[in-house]
Length: 251
Length: 269
Image 1: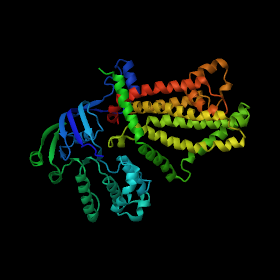
Image 2: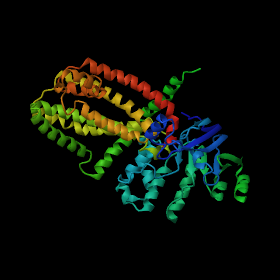
Image 3: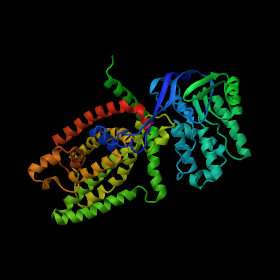
Image 4: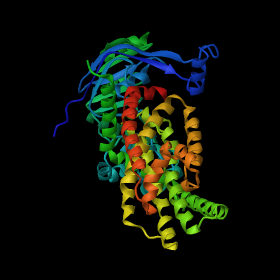
């Protein structure tokens, strides 16, 4: 069975971001402000609406390696979340076809009390793998971590380097159609770094669509076929990597 | 033009259906939650069972002396009531925070949101399994035979779960938006514990108070459809009708509500 090709299509997508504070998260304040006609606590929730993304239209087809650049707060993370189907645009449309895995925080879902082996299962399930598929890859993943007998010890007993290795090994053990990366993953000592790098390349080349947000010019030039420069929630430039890198890093 | 209610229901039902289709996520995460308790202590989830056991013994002693009820009647009644109530109340309390507690995951992984509600439900069903172990020795001790009527407990339990699930779903959505609603809901559950016949018996009520306190109390009916069969009491038409009707209306309302706000939930976290 062939899965249909992955694609992402945003049409006029905007995201208005309500920023809630303790007061606006409170039902009591809402009721109080309603029954007093807003006299008490006039700016009743103090909720600030931030325009996270404005009117973004783009199409990403299979085979594309899309890089995202922009200053902090330009909306990169928000756009990554829209592209991975987590945020639905508040206006406009987002169509996402294909299974998507975002490796924004590779430590997500890891239980420090559980053993390495159990954590591989947990993390794998969270990334959308079936338990059978994880068990089939289990030995390969354990092998890659190089943890040896430590794999059956609780995760919390690992050194931070070992913890990173495990998280990395299991996160890169998947083969999604759409891969979303917030910065390139690189971990560990020199020896591991090299193997990690190779594994990242395998993962990236196996995915149909890559979306990579990064501040590194070399990485973007090396991995992307197209770059988008995001500025104040809008697409400032969309084109081939060399041109965008020149404009963005050059200015 | 399509009916907005139907659209909401379709959106919500799509989420619920996908969550149930990927039940391996629910069971893995739910088991994990229980396993965590065993890692922290050897007794694990049985700590809760011990709690309930102590409570049953204490209450049985106090109320047995106070109301001079025969201990062989009050203990099984208390035990079933407390176990079922413990299940239902924890579901509601933890249901409130099912999205809030999973916010890191929700913001990074695209999964049906109902998965997180089912995770809480599954986890607590496993814990209920622990607590149920109290019952057989208790029934043996007081040589209280189970009658064929006890089979009603199975549909009764299913109906209880169906009702708990929609309550949890609706509360999970509302509590994600209004964080203080969690406290309000938990206080409400606490109040219901006292006004529902769990540690006291419905037979103690004067007739005119009884109607108001029992017939209009949905929790009474939910407990009743599970507890009565095990005590060998014939099913009450009223309790069954109320529970069934509640499940039906509750699910429709919860689906419309969930469908209406589903897209907003990640923004609230």
